[in-house]
Amino acid sequence: AENESADKCPVDHKNMTKDEIKKKMYDVYGQEIDPRNRMPVHGNELPSPGQTQRLSVERAQSTIPKSGSDGTWTYPSPQQFFNALNRKGKASDVEEDDMETVVQIHNKMNEKTWKEVLKWESYRHCECEDIKLKKFVGRPSDLSPTARMNTWMGRDPPFDRHDWTVDRCGKDVRYVIDYYYKDVQEDAGKDAERIHIHVRPALDSLESAYDRFMMKFSPPVGTPPSPGRTEPLANISGDPTLKESLTELKKQVSNAELDEQEFLALSALTSEKIRQISEEVGKKCDGLRQALEACEGEECEQVSVAANYCAASTICA
Image (cartoon, rainbow, N blue to C red; front, side):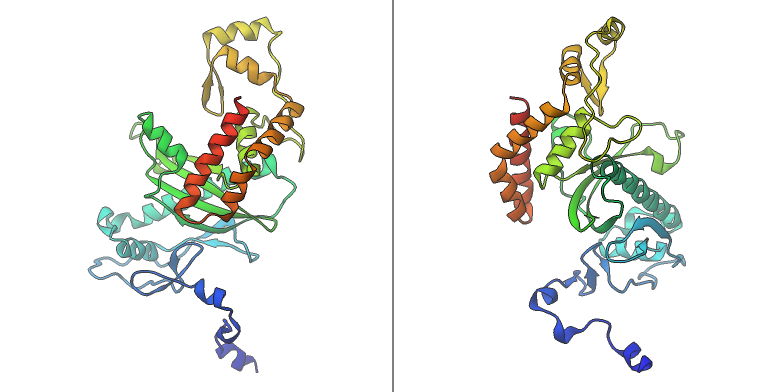
């Protein structure tokens, strides 16, 4: 009986629903791919046509917990990575000799990205201690609203974008990640350290919009606050020394430069005031929140921008 069950297909196709069958995805070559990471279900580790060197098929284990299992995500081998680049028509961008290094940089970027995600989760949602990565997708051709605004201001666009969906104790939360090259000297360090990673929750819900508001204007100092509790920023209006220093140096909150008046205004925020603002945003932007929950595809980005504008205009009113 043991051998009989081992020979059977692990997926019971007879009892699959129509929705489950529709969830199957294929690439342009007809290979079935995992919708969570857009990689082939059966990773091809054979050399690509025209390949001149043998590449490693060893796969490294990540530290990123995988939703639906007790294990962690496994990174592609250099051979799988090279084959994926070939399928996308991008193999000419790299040398076969460089694949080991390319994969190492890729893995380090993902590890660093996960640490940034955990910073958000531990600050605002530390009641869940079992955060896992459910799925991820690369969207290098799709500029996020933040990245688009940055390009309007003359900044370089990100070289890549990922959308990661996190399993927060049964609740799906999407994160948007933009990857930028740092403007540093060639000898400034390893390649992975020359990359700036901008991680934040996608504006798919008012809760995520509120998390972004809190992280920007009341970022964690030292250890994160307790769940549901918001620590007000220190009020410095009565300190002449700090006030004087503000006239000489601009204060920064989450990389946003503020002048003296703006900083003093933000320092007066209390948890009660922020709660009132959050309730007001909830009332005025509820229609957009419902639209975000119902939207699909490119429409979501437009609704997301509208929701962001609604929240911002309410907060700044």
